[in-house]
Image (cartoon, rainbow, N blue to C red):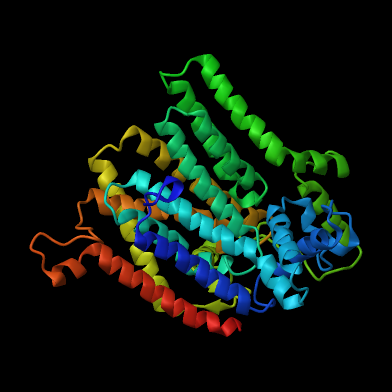
Length: 448
């Protein structure tokens, strides 16, 4: 009998976790370095940590990206630390460059696997029907772009894992009147998020606001108990993540985020005549907002959302056009279905809090990416907003459950007819999702 953490998992859910790990690990073993965005720059950090056993500050010549003039050590780099740990373990057996490169990718492989685990566990809390946790996790973790992120070294994968942990413990905390155990779990998720990537900081902010509101409105908690829980969360975050920002402030004249230092270095590089990398700002070039969003020269919205679904290599390997249409149709169906349910049936309090967290975080993440691309640096890359998949998946699964669709992965229909059982919406979704994934895997061969 399964016990503890794994007791709720079905065989199909465990199979999904194994499949996610297997696909990501296979990709990590066979993908070359070239078609993986920014991987070479990330590996400068993991290689430094592996070779020296120390953490970089951003001032070391070996960690500086030549075309940029600055180092990614100015930004949070938990993924590089974990990657270096895997490299150390592998080096006990071999120092072959290919083996060390695969080892450096294991942080991403494990991050997407952890993401799938917490998506399933969250799904068990959110949905009553047995198959919906599986569908909720599949929607996110079998999205081609998510699997691609799990194949090479990057910060996006560990950021996704941290959001899954945050959402799970947010729900657990709300249900348990914020027990100390769940407050600690949430703080760990927040700490991982703080050390992963700035692109998900909106999730941290929105989570903090809604946790505070929930604690203050919880009638079972006194003001002293609320303060204790907030202090515990803050203390754990400071212990696990605060060191990086304090260290940054010490080494970079108070610039605890590192962004101001990065910008100054880049300006100096450009002033010295290095044009290998320039920040292109449509706004500074006089491009109107309408042109930015609609003209073929930019197509920012289109490219961004296509690359949430799956654009591989260095944004130059696309799936067949009709595939994106099918994905869009499924996503749109989930959004419209969820709206229909919410307009006709007021969600429970805990669902309202989670919906609020997901909606506000997703919207803020999208807006921040838009502002960055329009006003500072044009980069229509879906990986920067990939965390919105949590809300999309939630809406889809929420609509399926509350519209009373016949979902019964492990059971039989009322009349026991095999044909009827196989043609229920859940089986149709699973078959379509797996077929789309299989076609994407075929497209990925162009990266080899």
